Image 1 (cartoon, rainbow, N blue to C red):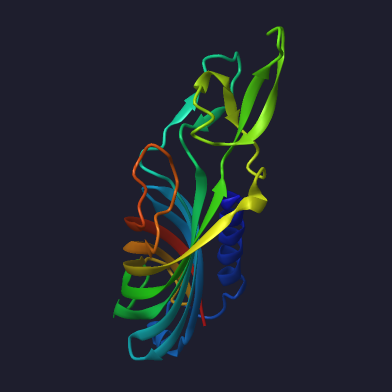
Image 2: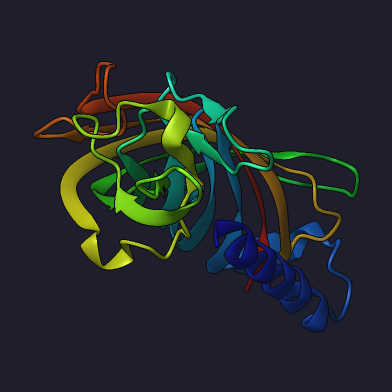
Length: 250
């Protein structure tokens, strides 16, 4: 699902700047007239993937006011994908995984232009810091469990929510159920985030954004986020990330 949304966002934001092209966009004098920006992109961190949407409005000089949004998947470092050896063509599942976890972040902050793009084939750098709420969405994991008939001549698969106290035999786990199974049981936890990053823009035209963002983000919650069983779950997540953004200025 995240891949589909990311592809749509990428295509939309790539097409929008090109439809607006007119005049000499490489003229550095035009840089001073830009007051707003909109960009989006693909977000990668060691525990998952996601998308980013960013809106900025110029305050004065090199300073901008920024609204920043992320939707990212979050995996536990102890997760491991396995396949049952009891079936000829089994599905796969993450052993001990309790919940699929996604963070929706909203951040409000400021950005400073560290250097301006004067000519084509040059790089513009920026620094941004923001903070705001994080909502953690926890969708329970459902598994396909094999139940044999009393005479063991055949059996059937039953979709059940994973329970570490009940589903202790990996030989009867066929694989994951459909992602939609249990979607209505998704729970939410509210926390806070703090993000800081450096952005490097290499676009040929001053009214376009084509940048790579390198940063760090901290998400903190009042209670632990239960992602897996038989491993330590945390309530504070600190990670480095990379984000590729495209967008437009006007």
